[in-house]
Length: 67
Image 1 (cartoon, one colour):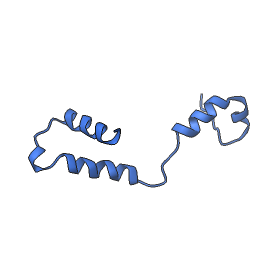
Image 2 (cartoon, rainbow, N blue to C red):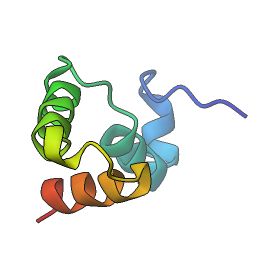
Image 3 (cartoon, rainbow, N blue to C red):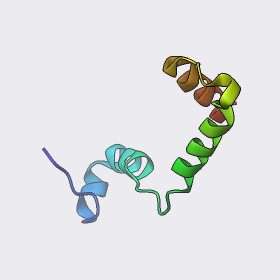
Image 4 (cartoon, rainbow, N blue to C red):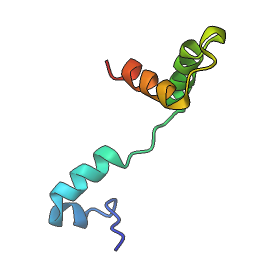
């Protein structure tokens, strides 16, 4: 079932779903967050760290962005 929450009536009937959808289903207006991740990845994976396993790079990116 697909709910369109922009109509107005559904948000009154399903307030929790409406709140969660507005919080997590938003589309960013720019691509700046993705550019920041690529920039950080470039800083982490330098010429001296080019042999890092992809899982380790993912963990380092996660730690860098969530600390």
